[in-house]
Image (cartoon, rainbow, N blue to C red; front, side, top):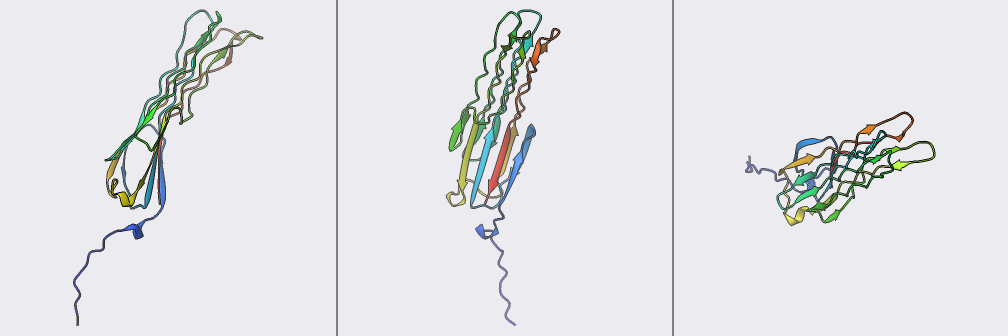
Length: 196
């Protein structure tokens, strides 16, 4: 009987099972790179909170700033920075300013405000008169695609991922019948990964 030497199988592109994973809850995660032909990471910073409203006098309530999200690959760290909070409005006639959009870095494409998740502003005033606070700025978005043949991102590499929380909504201090819309918090960041 002929006994052939044992040969350990070596995973290759033939082992690729297409898939995807989404990280949308704020926190820190570990992602193990699967076998892939191409892999895409889409990193989105958190949105800023909408500006608030004071119905009893002059005081500006700001929305909170959103925080960054990232995907730390060996050859590039993708970062989507958070948007800034909007400034508030008040009953004296002050209106708010929109928060700045977050920038992005490390991607093949980096889009300021590309996450599109800023909070809504408070609106106040008496019937017939509306004073708007500012919208929260949207988080930045970084997208990068890796090709397995380049060897820059290897299967079984463990990647650290961070998803940032959205900025809090600006405080609303109502007087009777002065609040027409309540401010909302900015949307959380996210990291989306897909491979084929």
